[in-house]
Image (tube, rainbow, N blue to C red; front, side, top):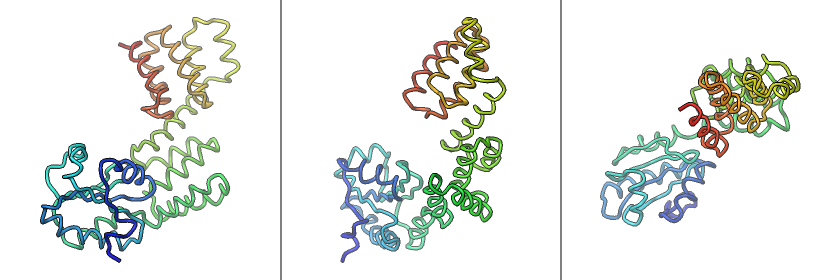
Length: 284
């Protein structure tokens, strides 16, 4: 069987790029080869890429894009020269190289992007978080003992600690993790819970707000507690109302808490976008 006929080596055009590359990269690594029939270097690189991908036996997909038939993709990825190789993971390009490279370089390019054994164990632990939480936690801790910089294990352990209400411990685990979207989400959850713990019970704060509706500080504190309890839409509404009653409170404390909530619900979510606009109108 020719390498080019294997199921993990596919021809992709503009119509199916989203499905075959962007969506597929959430399941496994996708390496895209942008080429053209008239390109001699492209023909030289192709068998090297196909061999490197074939060695992974389906762990990686090679998507071949003929830019003559996909000019919009060429424009989208600002392609100035070919062959150009882009690797996609989780819907985004994560590595690239241009031009013909030696076989060893191509093989190493692919191998470096594959999940390590520790990453695979972390993925297994994640699947066990609900059904076998003790085992999942033990796996995360074992991975971090071997490699304290393993991001997937650190995120998983922090997630489990937060679930148990151990926010301070979760933040310590996250100390060595960069500002990824998931890490920032977990830090924001921990921060909101710590903040909300200073202001008493939700019921008592509701009574304060009901008794004096103009009390901006009470509304701010209730908003913090609601956020700590995971009631994010109501928290944002309460925080917004606190800022409307006290502009100075809005510019400092209210803004900081709302930004943390945006990180938890998703910076580009409909809820975050709605209240980001409301907050901007309030501040500016």
